[in-house]
Image 1: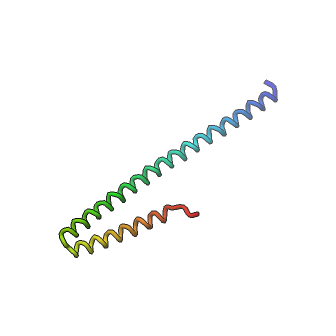
Image 2: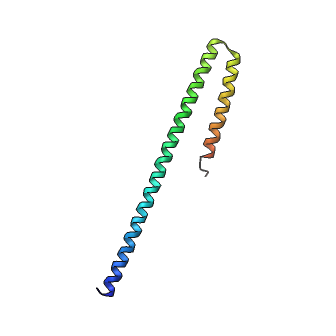
Image 3: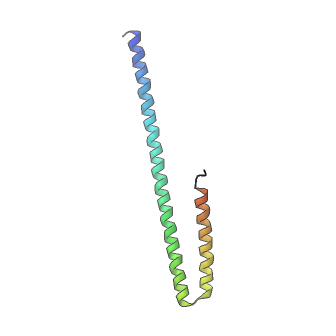
Length: 95
């Protein structure tokens, strides 16, 4: 094999290695993104369950005319809303 062919083989080999490395990096990024999307979906579902549960408890307390329970639920709802708002703000990119 002459020097020119050797140079071409080495150049092609380097480029192929670069393409393979980029593919591996893209797959890792895709896996991380898939995990984050699932985590976000899980958190959103948990928040919905929490909010629906508190809403039902509030309806029940109103129907029963229980002012103490209504106040407790208002406090709980406020704390949950504050925690959810903080989490959304913390995980929302600026700009």
